[in-house]
Image 1 (cartoon, helix red, strand yellow):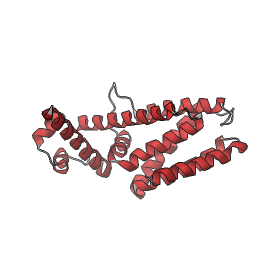
Image 2 (cartoon, rainbow, N blue to C red):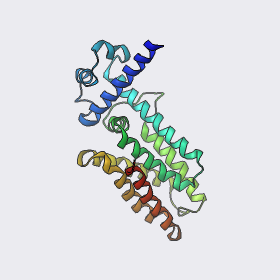
Image 3 (cartoon, rainbow, N blue to C red):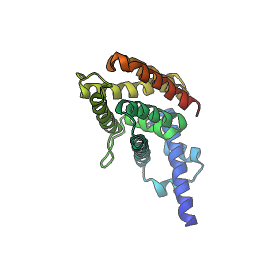
Image 4 (cartoon, rainbow, N blue to C red):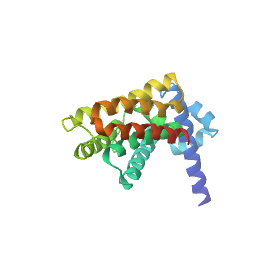
Length: 215
């Protein structure tokens, strides 16, 4: 059991080190030797767990996918209205990026040409489904205009969400992301939400930002 625990800890250390380097320098610009040095492990330890750099990338994207599904599940379990659940989901994903390199690296890998192989699904496809389902619910609950094109809004929301993170990566620290998420929602709420219901969701965006900033 002790040997298995050490192996799991070593694997996690390697993944975290690789994620940090992929996030900061990109997949193509990061070598396995740099990952070994950053993780402070031997090459033998790395190759015991990962046969190639691509395997490391897939492990990071799988962890990102698991984290996204976990956040979505926790939100669903609390029974929020659909639009609130959607907003909490985007802020929850933003929190993951603020707290550690796995989510940041997963996004950079997804936008950097690293192929996603089955059974792993592309994160953008997962996010589209997660957001579409909640948008449908928000229309039924009259929190979003009834005549919106759900597919178009979901696609635009994913692009907005991803674009905000990609642009921010090169221009400002990850800690700024909650502010950008709030700004994103200030724009979207004014376009999607009927006037009488806007104050509630504008207030929610500000509150969710504060919660992440407060840790």
